Length: 238
Ligand SMILES: [Cu+2]
Image (cartoon, rainbow, N blue to C red):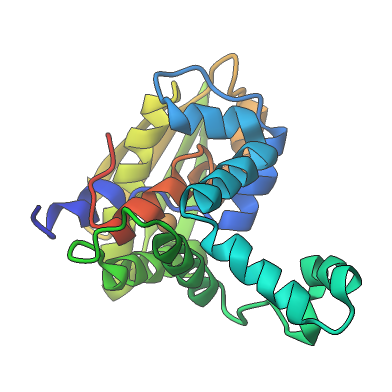
């Protein structure tokens, strides 16, 4: 498959992992033909974790085996293992130190744990490019919000790499929102994107106002699965 379109197609899903997990717990889950996306939303954090665990198991327990080895190598056996859940086995830290680094590390470990991984298609550099876009949009985009009678209009602007990231991510994310039943649209501007979201029964005006740009960007459960698909060199099912 071509490596060009995925960027515009997938890049849409700008959300931070921790935020979406947290939000998924609060979200009642939207109605829509989203399959795994919807399952993730409905399952919230536990659903996602179970999915990850299942993937680990399917991958012949690569991660589990590693964890077990660390546990048994640890000086205090089970006790060391218990601590391993929180601090890493045998006093080894688990925090990656940098969020994009951690996101890439998690995906690489998942691919290594899956015997079906096709390394000829894997494209970790593509995932890194997307995470750079996410950084631009999340931290550097300028936003101006205007309340409408029945919705919110947000002008998202930036320059250089920030502008390019906005144009890749915001329209693609809006398509995902539409897929889960939101009344959202994106319109290209010379210096950014105009995002308009209309209120509905499930997404009332007060909520849209409270969410604002980045809150709307983290909505939906499609983001993390898209990261894995990007890394695998696959297209998302839009
Ligand atoms: Cu992303």
